[in-house]
Length: 368
Image (cartoon, rainbow, N blue to C red):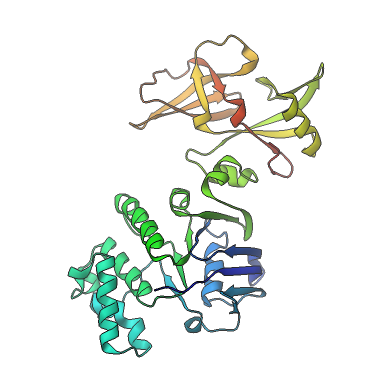
């Protein structure tokens, strides 16, 4: 049904006046791959997608779809289909006519149009809606109709710009799974834009994280989570986000330590060696994920734990988020729903040394 296509973006630059929206981005999306462009508002992800679609003209760089350089091709000749946040359905047309529209524009035979529309409607489970107008559809049904209009063309590449953001939370969860399965079944190369990291992590083969127009890291979701390239990626991925504590690296009696003022942690020799080799100064940032921390009332060795005070307790049903005060820092921890504590209570925070992250304070690049 769909033709093989990879997308390659080489040294892409796009400016709007004096603002650089996309700054020297290079990225290859393999055939049949689902790649998510992830980042906060204004990071350049939608502009990158629009450059691939042909809706924006790059100032520098090259874009290939398959083996074809498409920089000078108009959108209609790029063989891509775009699904927008707003769905952009024609209000005066039925669902059938909305889905059929791109085929009618290309002057397909009537029988072929009918066959394809019905096939796509069945795939998306909207066959019973073909006679309705967009105003008679729910958010999920409108979203499926917009998807149907994209699929019916059998393009080389799907480009999706926050297609689930207008849906309510429950429907968004459902459609996330549906979209992922649909992409697998169709086997079509897909570039998907979102600011929602849960969406990115659950759907993507690889995630490309952007900030201020710059590509920060491209990796499968689990690698992004476990091995972030820098503090931005570490803080953006994960909910609640990673805790950051400023520390100084120091050596005493042949051993390496992280000193945060309110506590001092002894490091394994190999970790101390990496910090000495890679850090630009003794100032580093300790990164700890909430799920890698736990509260205890007693410790045998104070140097293996962090003294803290319970600040706030947030019960969520399936878990409890504990905000603990460590010096001037508020550190978030994940605890079991059975956790009990009182505000102001003095406790210890234990953590898994295998799971700690250390960043260079000056460059914000990952050291460990």
